[in-house]
Amino acid sequence: MTDKTEEQILHPYQGKSDDALYGAFLSGNNEAYDALMLRYGDSLTIYLNRYLQSLQDTEDMMIEAFARIMVRKPMIRGSFKAYLYQTARNSAVRLYRKKRRTEVFSLDGLERELADVRRTEDDLRDRERDQALHRCMARLEPQLREVIWLKYFENMSYEDAAKVTGVSKKRVDNLLQRGKEQLKAELKKEGITHVFD
Image 1 (cartoon, rainbow, N blue to C red):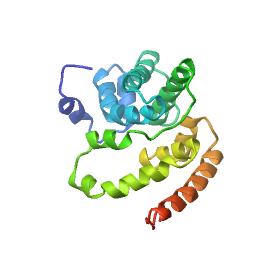
Image 2: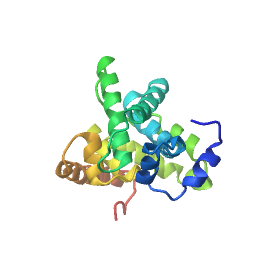
Image 3: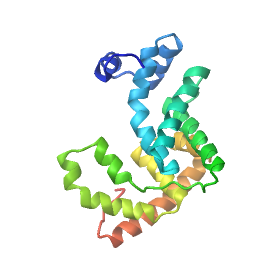
C-alpha cells in the first residue's frame, strides 16, 4: 500500500463498487486495489480466524489472498468479495491440512475481535444478547455456522456463499434453512425470540 493515510486512500473511492475499483486496478490504478484491501482486510481477517485460530496465520492468509489476486489479475466473474473470500478460504484449508488440523469453522474469541473493531455504546448495551447469540452459534454444526456467518454477518448472496464454501446454491439454501431452525431453537433456550423475522 502507499504511504497515504487510510482516509486519503478511501476518500476518492467512496461509493464506488468493488467491480469499479477492481477494474481501475486492472487499468493500472494501484490505489484502487489499496481501497479494496482497506474495505475487506479486517472482515476477511475475522472470517479466516474462524479456521486458523492463530492471528499470525490469519494475517498471513489474508495478505496472501490479496497478493494472489494482485499478481494474477484474474478476470473475476461474479463478486470480487466472494472471489477474495474463496481464495482466502482455499489457502486457509490448505494450511489447515498441512498442519493436520480438522477443518472447523470456529467462533472462539469472536467477541474480543469484534470489540476491538467496533466499540460503541450499542455494542456494550447489546453485549448480553451477542454473547447468547455466539453461544448458540457455537452449538451448531460447523457447516451450518459458516453459511449463516457468510449470509448474515458478511451479507453475501446465496451464489457468493456457495462459491466460497464450494457447494451448490441449493445446498446453501438447505444449510441455511436447517441452520436457522437450529439457531432459533437454541436462541429460544436462551430466552431470545423474534429472530429472522
